[in-house]
Image (cartoon, rainbow, N blue to C red; front, side):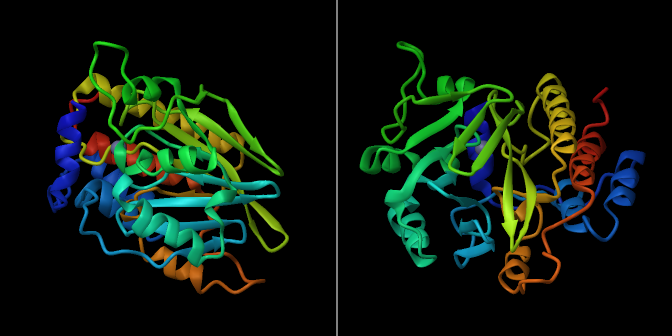
Length: 303
Ligand SMILES: [Zn+2]
């Protein structure tokens, strides 16, 4: 199935461009309103896979301690702490030298200061660059145990890719990665892969600290997986909703910006200190509800 996914992701084209006409779609549209309209459009109307041809983004300071690097399809983030950098995802391996390392340097960050790379799930467009940080600068690479298994299969059960990182930090549901003044909490959200992770972490805007939620393994093409996988995925969305509500998450982050609104990067870049930050919301859980309703809309056979 994973192979099918990767093929699907490379297609790069909208899968359909018309919302299904049913009560779940109506509910999703109503929930989304104007605020989450781009998420509704992505999940219900015109899902699109990330592709190698997605236009690059300018490396962007999103919050005072949080930077985006990559392209409009897929991004990695640098979370700066008092004792070094936590990289969240690491782009495909073939973008390490051309996008990721130059991007870090462009925003004034030294790749040698990356102490951890947290990989939200074990697909190459998120894990590819992590090997370099492990090999060259001794950074720790953290993944869920389950996705380590998927990336580095046991003897006789498939072959690990040449640029996969060596097995290192294994994260389980509720585990944390701590570096300096920052703690990142991992929430197991299987579905897109068996060990996908949602992450919760603090971001700073002036003197204010907000909590960010990043649903790290999003199903791109809801028409594909079987019903049991989608049920697991729906349970993961509910689990992440519970965890993010408890943590008072008020910032929505995606590793595929085309799933929320790539134009938000411009709004973050233009943000002036002392004014409300454009990425702060008071209803993060609505984003997750829209995802779930759109899945039901597209697959009415789901219980
Ligand atoms: Zn993936």
